[in-house]
Structure formats: structure tokens, C-alpha cells
Length: 333
Image 1 (tube, rainbow, N blue to C red):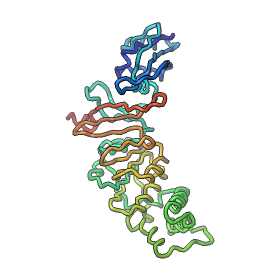
Image 2: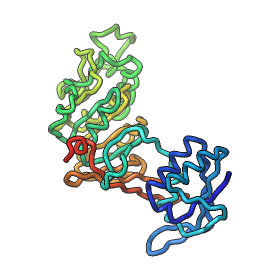
Image 3: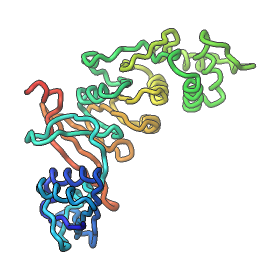
Image 4: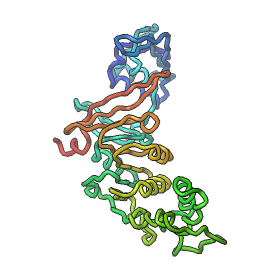
């Protein structure tokens, strides 16, 4: 059975949610686009939206849930944001709050990359994963309230040799040069196994200090072998190359989720966080970075605003939702 959706009802977010949820049960949604226009600085498309399914019960369910279906195509000017929301698929994996009118739950996906100015929401999201690592270069108080274990450096003994080798190669290449990767590897694995190299490039002077800083600033730990499920590493005030080392090594670990709190987004931060499928960046002030994040969460008093980047054709839109964070919703404030 094939029908068209009455265009006017698509402005209701709940209706779009119903349609997108029905996809999981076999509903096909087809957007027919005829023309793009800009009206009052808003991008709109002359479009129609068709739905079809072999399951009559599914079609009837849509009607019962408020989706008005008509037999003839009805073309109207529809906001590009609405069409982008309909076309974008993202799973509702992690509940993070309640809509401002208390009518529905706000979710994010486990595949989202997040930038936020609210460390509380970042801490909550981190704790929903089986394992996480928080690298703090901003100086945030209260992380331990979420039962993160503070590290005395990332424990090298807890990592597979393959990760240590990859870290040594990348970090040396980013700093002193690739030819020093074996020397760094030897430093990292000494006291845990045979070196396994016929020779090493000696490090002297500035080069020696460059690598020794990793231990002096407690960025890397060669003594401990415990890497708790939810770990926190305080890197406030450390030199740039020390922070870079932890960023690289942290991104290479098997932790499911990485959070980095930092004063600003840098090229290196982008380069190595984007190794990961999902992560959060905590900044003093939200900065949009299309290639780094698809979700932005800003906090104002006891409410938050989620902005999800969505696309239709070549146009980028931000789907906004104001919500009460789950840590306040639970308290009943």
C-alpha cells in the first residue's frame, strides 16, 4: 500500500519520530523533491513525502498515531530542516533528558561525536558505556563524583604491545621524527619484556627530556597494570607535547568512549580524536566543527539545547531540541 503524507503535519516532531520509527518495521519513506527555494532566508523545497508498506496493520497504526495519509500526491513547500530530519537515520541509544514540555525522551546515538560545554552531561554519557577514558586539559572539578578512577598516567602494562608500537611510531613522527620511534618503544617496554632490537638510537639532551616528560608529568605510567573501566587523567598545565601523547595513546586504546576537556580545538585534536567512532569534547564555549562533531549540547541554567547536524541534498541544518538533562529530571527539579 502506498500513500502520501499530508505535508502540514510533518512540522510536528513527534509525527516525524513516528514515521522514522516505523522504518524499523518495514515502512519505506520516499521524498520527492521538485525545486529548491529560499524564502525569508529559509531553505525550502517543493516536495512531497510518500510512504509504502506491504503490512496493512503498520499503515493503520500510523493513522492511529496521528499520521494523516492521503491517496493523491500533495506538493508543498517544506522546510529543508524537516526533510533532512526525515532522511537522516540515527539510533536512539542513550537517553539524556526529557523534552521541555515533558512529552518525550531525548536520545543520542552511540555513534555520535559530541561537543558540549556541560561536563555533567559528558560525564553521564561516558558512564553509559562499558569503559571510558577522560583526558582533562581544562581543569574540571567534580568528575570523581561520577566514580571515575583517577590515573597516575596511562598504564602501559595494561596495553597490548601492538598499541604501544603504534603509539611510539605516531608520537615520534609527530615530535622528534620517525627515526626515534624504536628508542621510544624501548623506553616504554623496558622492565616488562626483552627489548627485541639489535640496536637503539640513543637519546641525549633535549630528545631525552622530550620523552622523559611523559613520565615526569604522569601522562604515562610504566609501573601499574590496572586500567579501570572508567578512568580519568588530569593533564592540567602539562606541556603541549605531553597532552598530545595522551591524546594519541588514549585514542588508540580499546576504551569504548573517550572524553577530552580542553580550552580549544586544535588540528592535532581533530586528527587523533577522529580515529574514534564516538567521543565527546568539553569546551568552555561551544564551537561548531562540521568535520569533528555532529551533535552539540549547550547548557543554560538547568536546561540544555541539543543541536544535531543533519543534511538534505547539499544543505546543512541543525535540528534543535531544548531539554531537561537527565541528572535534573531524575532529581525532579
